[in-house]
Image 1 (tube, rainbow, N blue to C red):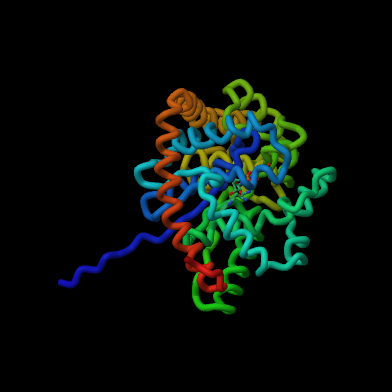
Image 2 (image 1 turned 120 degrees about the vertical axis):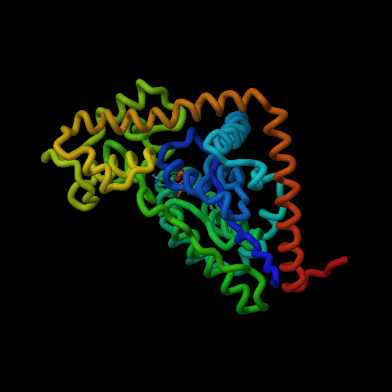
Length: 336
Ligand code: ATP
Ligand code: LTN
């Protein structure tokens, strides 16, 4: 019988090491990364080059970079199965981004929703990097010939522009880049703020009372859930349009328990909002407290973490530099 060697498909994702992560990041991105790591050949980066598009305190950026690596591992990413590395350790990202800049139009970048939002929020620092952010992200993804990219729905526009840039380049030269697909969670692709579910739960929200951070302790988690907005009827039912607060809580509950929305609705039939919110808080705390302990344990093992990052950067560089040289050849850069 003929043996067919099935190559695993390639998966790429990254998170910025800015502020503490939220359960929105966990549900929208990290949970999917963990779930997909067996099936795909995975590359996971800490996007510190993206992080500096908003001003960072250097010592904190350094600390948060390692904290994010420890969190990846504490959430279940296995360094034996996937390549975990820091973006700035692989110079190819900046190099490919420069080339891709010449295949991207200023008008396209000006239209990006995240650029407009962040420009409004950081009006004193609308730097070129903030505008160029999606091109660097395209470079990340395309360097690794990624087939799939699990992210939250807020990143869809960046995924679309990555595809456009890849197709544009392939059409001008010859097939070079794999055109990647975004993978968005079925439930929880956009977790809302607990106090204003119409807004994305964000690391950098003005009022932290509506955000559950991955490092919140149990009392804080319970208090924030108790104050979460619901509505004026009393039925625990998933209906994002008419019941945004309750639906958001149901999304969080199902993400943290693995139950389906229908199961959760049945479980909470006839239960008051107060008890429902307590149950959601308990489910979240039950998951987060052990993750926090594991993250703290790992952070004390700096040599171990550095070893993972060193091996990760080497593996990543091998793949990325091969793509970059192909690109350089195609565009006519003289090579020695
Ligand atoms: P900020 O709000 O400070 O811009 P962020 O919270 O969006 O940052 P990122 O590092 O930009 O954090 O995002 C990491 C991943 O988490 C991305 O895949 C993003 O889509 C996802 N994500 C972020 N917030 C949410 C959310 N509220 N719901 C679902 N997914 C989210
Ligand atoms: N911009 C992303 C983080 C990120 C990313 C990537 C995600 C940087 N490079 C490549 C997927 C693929 C965000 O989540 N804000």
